[in-house]
Image (cartoon, rainbow, N blue to C red; front, side):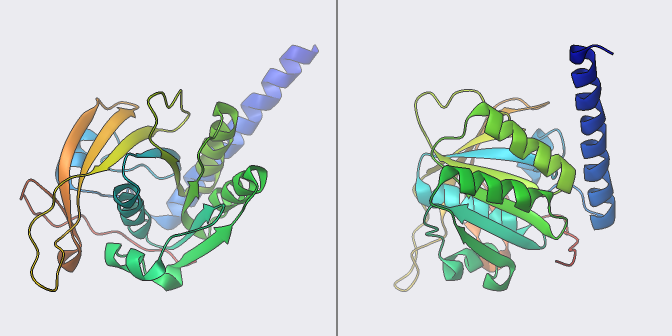
Amino acid sequence: MDRPSLVAALRARIGRLERAGAAAALARAQVSAIPLAPAIDRALADGGLARAALHEILAAEPGAATGFAALALARSGGTVLWIAPEPDAWPSGLKAYGLPPERLVLVRAPRPADALWAMEEALRCPAVTGALLDMEVADLTAARRLQLAAEAGGAIGLLLRPDTPSPGPTAALTRWRLAARPGEEGGAHHLGDPSWQAELLRGRGSRPQSWPVTWRASQDLLDIEGAVAAPPAVKRRRA
């Protein structure tokens, strides 16, 4: 067999092994896509945020992007990693989105190479249900490696990046932009529930859409224009 044919055969074999690994991990977990809100879930090809996949979040406003990411990680149902050069995630604040500190592992990785390595290893680990990488720039090759790692391990991967005029191509299954919007009036001791504009910029099998959403922490609900509905139950797995 000539060299190009041998390389192609090896790549095909690796691809089959990784897809089989993702299928096995998901079968063990007995879980489906991660629910967000009924209207958003219906617009996504997988009925929610797909597991065993990488999703990209562009932060037009950091607080909105962090809240959306925390909600997705919380609903993954198990241990999650938050990887950044200097993790500024506040565990007590993330708890408001359903992510308790005992399920959260913060990873400090100042060097991009170390951060990418930690993210890839986390996504391949069957004990991890989700991992987030906070990184300003991730080239297409690195993103593809993360997508393959998520497929192999079955976890959901989130790539959190600043919003820029030209974010470039992505290997992620979906790309989102999260911005803040005016919230409802709170009381003297309550600032009101956080409100965001969640925009799906691209998604395989889905068309771009945008939703004004409000996070109702007291009800564990993502509300779209006042239509409150309970999210589907999420089965949990052991770490």
